[in-house]
Amino acid sequence: MNETPPIILWLRRDLRLSDHPALFAACQSGRPVIPVFIHDDEVAGLGAAPKWRLGLALKHFAQELTEKGSRLILRRGAALDVLRALVVETGARSVLWTRGYAPGQIARDTAVKAALKADGLEVQSHPGHLLFEPWDVATKDGGFYKVYTPMWRAVRDREVPAPVSAPARIAAPDVWPASDRLDDWQMGRAMDRGADVVAQHIHVGEAAAHGRLGAFLAHRVARYKSDRDRLDMDACSGLSENLTYGEISPRTIWHAGWRALQDGQAQAEDFLKELVWREFAYHLIYHTPRLESENWRPDWDGFPWQGEGDAVQAWRQGRTGIEVVDAAMRELYVTGRMHNRARMLVASFLTKHLLVDWRLGRDWFADCLVDWDPAANAMGWQWVAGSGPDAAPYFRIFNPDTQAQKFDPNAGYRKMWLAEASRTPPQTALDFYKACPRAWKLSPSDTRPIPIIDLKTGRERALAAYHDHREKQ
Ligand code: FAD
Image (cartoon, rainbow, N blue to C red; front, top):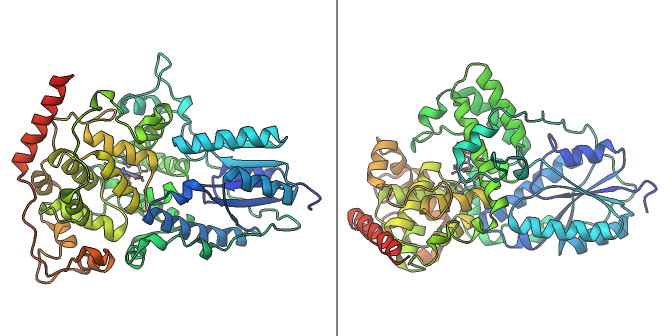
């Protein structure tokens, strides 16, 4: 047993050393710190790509902790049971963590906090995942924001505390509790053949995240607004992958963005606006947890969405015959990411042209995205489907061909991802066949599929379905 009771730092989506208020507070106390990550039901329920990517984040962060004289203790089980066991083993009197805001996280954390407090422990939850706590941003009448632009106006000029520094050292306990081996958790097991391919496109860890931010501000922010919708350009920051595991804090990005703006980079404001879309997603999911799984607009209940079937499978495989949609679905499978405009296009095609329930799309993204985020994904799907807040009106149906002409004018994006379209396909397009399940039986020498739906017919069918649904209400 340690003489000075240590602090348990329960890590979740906050795998960084700098601007980590809970870690900072733990270190400031002068007491030994035991960083713990728990493989609980939330982790077990992750999709293939996010779980694999989380495993890489943990491996990387464990090394960073070692360099600070600390360790990452890994345990498996229900969070409360694991934390209680650790309290008994280590004599800890305090448990600290960074707040989560998705419905499952809130339910778990509330129960854990109440139980540990009842055990007589000190429990602290800290900010760090967001710029603004969802309850600190309110409309004039005290409600929450249901539309993005007024929220942006409300927070734009708010004071955001400066990031706190990384600790020079993290005090270690006299005796370390036992830890699972990360390899035994097999975080990449569900990745099938895809891991080696997707691994070429990811940027793991805090240093990589800061590198990404620096490169973006040095080379791309100047034309961010002008180019961010271009499918054939690398015009965005790529930081969503790091934000979702907490490898960089939103405050760090916010302050860097503001400095760029003040240094004369006018388009940095548009970047800050996007960061507030992430805040908006969490604001909404906190105030309306149904965003995650139910139509945010109840008048959408009863809409005759279609379910699982050949069309959905063709969409997943990038075999709809609509080139830009197929290119985007291949990009997703090969890189674990997808351009934001492409996300909107494939979501619109699935939910409008194919009339498929947005939850099937949400789930496929949750399985494939290395930047999967419970709030941004649910909001993105509902926003496009029309069932969500601040939604694109249902009758606004993206035409994928027109969008491709506008945002991929030289077909560079489509060529990059579609092998069937070329005699000499680029490696990016060929990599899809290395990564996709053998059971799909796809080959680069397949002929291009004919469109599974005529775009005009699909659009008219969607409008008719919407009209009928409204009539019945
Ligand atoms: P940048 O353009 O560099 O933007 C900076 C940051 O702002 C991003 O890293 C991200 O944190 C935030 N941001 C940008 N756009 C959005 C947005 N529309 N909504 C919320 N936050 C935003 N984003 C995720 O992080 N995880 C998801 O699972 C996810 N699923 C989506 C599903 C659909 C159907 C749609 C339409 C969008 C989804 N998004 C999701 C939002 C957006 O596509 C990504 O955040 C963006 O593509 C990330 O690329 P980036 O980091 O280069 O963004």
